[in-house]
Image 1 (tube, one colour):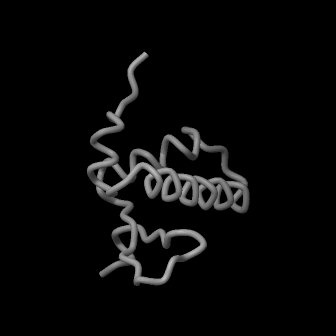
Image 2 (tube, rainbow, N blue to C red; image 1 turned 30 degrees about the horizontal axis):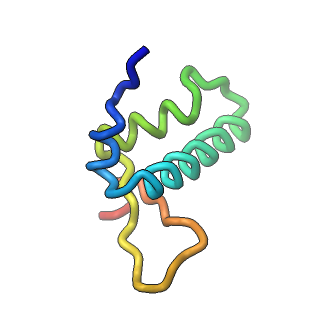
Length: 81
């Protein structure tokens, strides 16, 4: 079984595996919470949707300052403008 999209492409888009995992996990939790609040079933698993958002460029990690943060900020691309 192959992973699609390729892990190397995802890491290139985000910068590091650590940041990728945190970014996808946070977005997946947000997607699951939104689906639960609305009461609508999800067509895909939240992690799969979050990975696709990273791959398509819709989800990017916010630039952070020198201070370490507890978790990276997640900003869908539409919110950055």
